[in-house]
Image 1 (cartoon, rainbow, N blue to C red):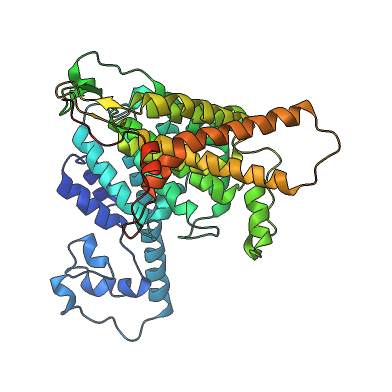
Image 2 (cartoon, rainbow, N blue to C red):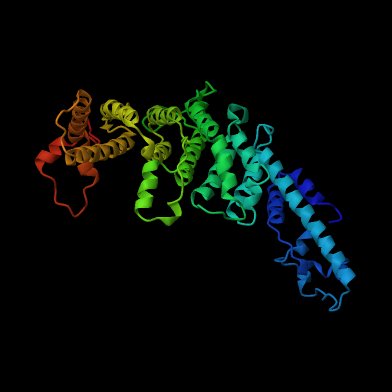
Length: 443
């Protein structure tokens, strides 16, 4: 109290040392109680560290801690409470200042000290998982600051993966809950999230589609088949992960009309009175841009399974919001890529196998096939009108053409993927329809 929290300032000036960063993390998690402070006058000569004031401290002097006087005057108690309140205010103010400084270490202000970035990221990530310190990351404008840093682009290229990972973990906490938690208000998050949603999503799409800055071999590597592969980079991976977290939070707190009606039909009382905003959080243009970006990632980085899996999760989150134009875009992508990725030939040996991203393409095709089959079943159950418009005829023709394409290209692969060990061997007719997905040796 007498030093006004100078220990925090001293530790911040040496954030490049991991041991001091760990000490700073311990100080941020400390708790003070009035009963720990009542013996201040008796032990002032024995206490040597702020750590000794922690109610969970393992100080060697705990066994010899003298007891406070059983009888205290009202004036002494008032003085003790005043000192305790002052110390608590100083401590809380310093903690907020420290967290803001740590966030600044992950911004474009820090472009050289990589050790400081790593230590600051370690401390901030630990704060996310602690219920007593989580509020430090989202209160006092800290959440807005983190979002702004995530949108800095190439100006913050060194720290971008770490700040995006931090924001993704923070958003994940809100995605799991629909009520206030950890002494934070959900309404504050929804206000900030809704305000910065479009900028955050669009900036991540720009990061994913931007060209690589370096022209040397640092952007490529040679795999076992002697093929030069473009590196995806940690920044793009974190951007894909952040988009997945963002859309998961969107579905939790801004569900689509279909999802909300389904929840109400199942009797979910917590969602009965929730009102879908008149203006959707995800605009049509932004949704199409995200879809095109995910498809671009599948084509541009065929060997990156981590990115592919994140892309599939993003498309699942957007599934409730897709319209016919989005489905047409996905169908066109599948028709082209399914044939283009059907066979991959190793340059040195001549062996061949299926394309590296064939699995994700088939997952998208199967999902659209199920949606198309559901639409056909619903149309068949409805009463046939006396007159059918040309638009309805064209739509029905398109649906049946897509189902025929799935039967020829997708269903044979689906049979192979869903076959269980206890199933009998398939007939020869079925095996003839299977695509060449097994490595073959040219003779």
